[in-house]
Length: 385
Image (cartoon, rainbow, N blue to C red; front, side, top):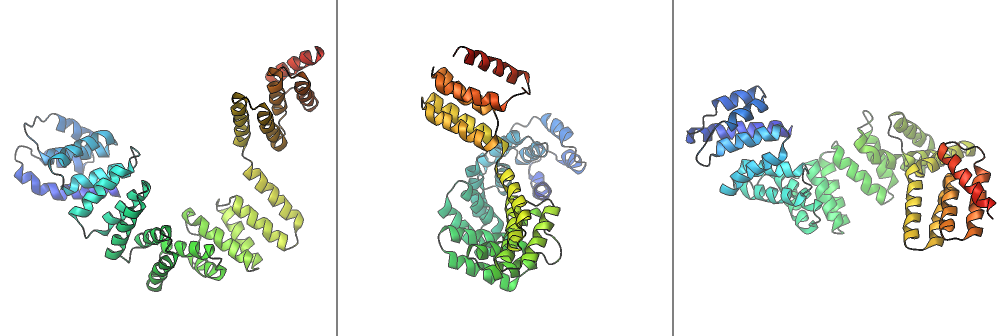
C-alpha cells in the first residue's frame, strides 16, 4: 500500500517538474514504471550523464532502488535531494518511510524526517501520528506526547490516533483523561476495533468485568476477529470466569484454541473453569499442560549457562546448585554428570563421586555414544576410589 502511495506521489509531482528540467526526459522512465520494470529502468537511468543537479532524475532513480529493495542506495539518493532542498516533501516522505521500515534500526532518523513533514504539511495528522510513534521508539516520550496530542487535535475521528493519544496520556499518569478520550470516541463510533480493544484493556486493568464483557461481546458479535485481538479475548474469558459465567468462559477458550489462538493463559483459564465446576481431574490435567508450556526446553540451557558463569566466578557451590535445579525440573541425568564434573575438577572426590553414582543409577542403559563414554569414565573414576 505504501509503495503504491509513493508511486502516485512520484508520478503526480514529477510530471510537473519534468517540464522545468528539460535536460532529463522522463518519457522512457514512465514507460518502465507503468510496466513495473524497475530493474531495466535503473539500468537505463544509469546510462544518463547529467552535468548538474536534477531532482526528477534523482527521484526516479531513488524510487527504482526503493522498489528493488535496495534501501541503502535509495536512502543515499534521496539524501542528495534533501541536501539541496531540505523542505522537499517527496524526499522527506521517502526518507521517513525508509527509516520507518527499521532497515537501519534508527528510529531517530525516521522521527527527524517526520518532523520535517509536519513542518512542510502541518495540517496532515498522519505525519504528527507517525512522528509521535517514532519519537516513542527512541523514548522521547514528552515530544511524542506533543505529537500525538497535535494529531488528535487535527483528527479526533481516527481510531489509531485516539488510541496512541490515550496511551500517551496513560504514560503521563493521566488515566482519567485517557479514559474520557476513549469513552468520547466510543460514544460517536462504537465499531472501531482499535478503540474497543483499548477500552477492554483499560476496563480489565480496573477489574470492571461487566465493561469488559460488554465491549468484548461487541467485538465478537459478527465473527472471531483477527489474532491481533488475542488479549481482548483473553480478558473476556477471565471476565466471564470472574463473574461466574463458567460455560461462556469455557466456550470462548475452546474457540480460541480451535483457531490456534490458545496459549498458556488460555489453558490456565480453562483449568480454573473446570476447577470451579468441580472437575478437578481435568483441571489438574490442564495445569500440567501449563507447566509444560512454561518450562521451555531452552530453560535447561539457561541453567547450565548460569552454572558455567558461576564456575568462572569460582562460586562452585552456586554452580552446582544451578545444575541441581535443572535436574530437579528436567530430570536429565546429564545434569548429574555436569555437577559431578564441577567437583571432579576441584579434586573434591567425595562430592564428585556422589553425583557420579547418582548418574549411574539414573542412566543404566546409555542412549548415545557420548553417554557410554561418560559411563566408562565414571566407572574408572570410582574404581580408583
